[in-house]
Image 1 (spheres, rainbow, N blue to C red):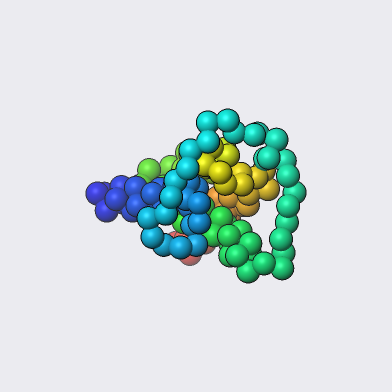
Image 2: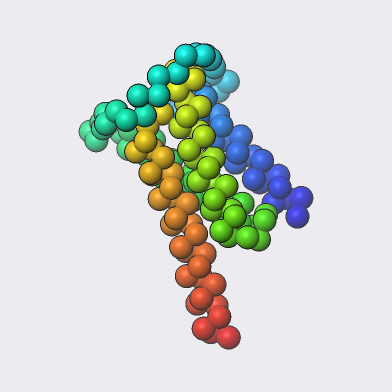
Length: 135
């Protein structure tokens, strides 16, 4: 049980680092700059950069990061619906927190985070049905 808690705590720190860091693509202790006056209208911007490899990697990190987070929470809590709800709430919070750290919190990133949670939840449900049908 302790390793599950440690894994969730570690992954929470990884996601929080990516949320608050000015440049999460460089894995060193980067600067954190708090901006107390967040502009919540930035959530609605649709500034897609499909040609950029950093943009693509960032969106894949959102998807797989929250798939992993939801899976780890389910392993810890043994309650898939609660785990999915916590992961979704955390995804929303990370996007809101980005607005306070000079990053680009976006509504579409919340959707990608939610897709990661939904994929993890769906795969777990499918896997549990498969196991039950074999027995």
